[in-house]
Length: 271
Ligand code: HEM
Image (cartoon, rainbow, N blue to C red):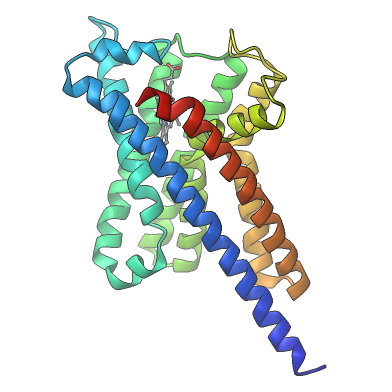
């Protein structure tokens, strides 16, 4: 009995780490699909010097004469592609350990891009206006931007004072809040698939209780799951770790359904 306990505990740690890797791979593939869409749709329109094509998707896209708004949007879209390709790579431990200098430089770039994304996003919502959704959704997304700025500051501070345990925790939180807009799309399509259509919101006005909820849940749910994961990893008993692995596995499957839906319904048709 005494000999089987360490083995049980080892298996629990292994299960949690395998499921975390599974989550990471599904997330990476899903985020790269968003990046492919941004490059293929927005990037190609820019290369063709046909920015008006952006207006097929965005409520207020390219507006002739609105140079600040157009520049903010162009930067936002350019960096959306960069951060969704590069962000997940920053979390790969092997890259971090083998190429620490690269990790430091790409980390600084990631923080800078996260800040630019948040500020341009806030500018588009609060100053340029005309964005799809209602004030509740705009508040949710604006809070997302503020959380990105806070998590970026804490991630940087922990790295500067060489507290790598805290740096890892803040970097994970930062990654999740930066992924908020991606979780919004994945969550929306998961909801559409399980309900076999729009429930709790109007697809015409793009408003309703479900979308108000999702505007906050897009980062609050992933952040909550992360905090439970970190606490479980730190100090839970083996059974707790198995339970966390099971929950994370189910959440990853649900995320996979949402990614497949978003790819089929949103990204691939526009490429
Ligand atoms: C940091 C990660 C972010 C990424 C990867 C990202 C990505 C994108 C993408 C791909 C679009 C084009 C819409 C589409 O084709 O689906 C977009 C538009 C937009 N984003 Fe972001 N975004 C991020 C953060 C933010 C934040 C924090 C805000 C708000 C403060 C924001 C506000 C906006 C707005 C207002 C638009 C225009 C949408 C419209 O007119 O309907 N974004 N973003």
